[in-house]
Length: 494
Image (tube, rainbow, N blue to C red; front, side):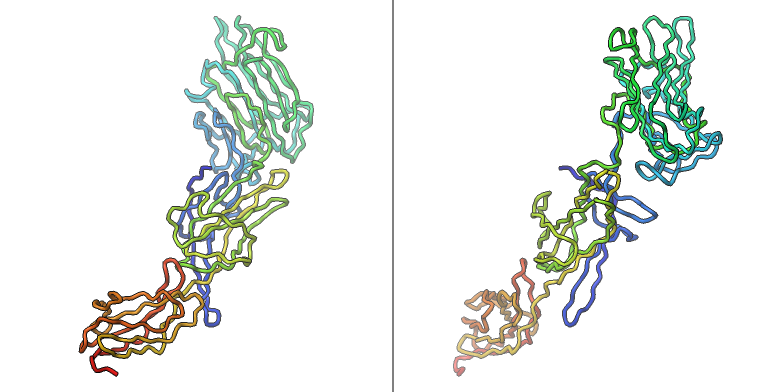
């Protein structure tokens, strides 16, 4: 599985004292102003909805081979495929309602429209034979009156000494769409050729409908589908059936596409592709949904106990988010599957996680109709930092012949793993050497230990001694030093 990095957002740390213990909360908030840490996304996107950042499933995309693609998600219309120039007639409005994405194009006849001109590399460049072809778009008409023109392609094609006025049209007739192709398909003998497709279902004013016209260069099939169902078929062939010579689409010179010059309503996801689209783009979201991995959070304390994960989300209809997390005291070497993910339900965790670092995984699924995506806004991780042990109490040191017996009261913390005994020749400087037990500090790996004998020392030398406890974390937390004591070994010690 491949993930990609995308825009990053900040994590904020808040602390709150509860009784004598210190608990903490790590918050990932998409509303944060600063940004640190990378989200890893597959078929998911960080975007803006109602002015606020949100993470949701990425809408399904049009074919990569698109020759012309108008998503209408930007404030100014532009060909996302880069092959066509776009000029605005009158005033252009971005519709707040969209079938896919964040916007659509809003038109009001005859005051608005778009004029699109193909560039030299576009499939519709002059005299460029086209093989397979598809034209796809969404409509939400305000009236669906007869005579409205959704789009009109005009060009002129030279055939021998004759000049043919070429046209592709999409008109509303009796509440239905009619597509006409005049001299767009070119017979080998250069004769004029007209073909049309008449829809059967009515457009419903105020409702979105999907439209796809596609041409198969292998058979000459020209087909119109509305909302994924076949409305009309014809053959651009010498026989008018699936036989004979197939007529090739050849755009003429001085071509331009007039979009919505006489149409009132919304248009979204307008596409021309040099391929036969098998599956119409009918649903905004893929059934498999998307995946998002949060930045790796640094809780600041190894062996922290992760007690709860709360989230702020929106889950319309049957949409869902499946949650899992992983944690560890080191973030080095993490892969897609290591450390292992643990599923959880937002709220308090039945079994607290452990570690200094953690990461959240979200699997986002659309509703049953694939019309709505869940949205994520923020999460808060509650955890109890694993604090270093307190300083051992009642430290004492008893002198002997070339030895010191160090004693202390063992700590009461449940996760004590042992003690470190420090010694040296100056106050607060524990760099001592010479004891048979080893140089300072000496590890005592016994949580129940309360004494240690340092032997092989020099009689008459003053030694300064302290002790600290360490816990079971990896690496261990070493606590504060006990109050320092001093002692001088001597031969005649009692």
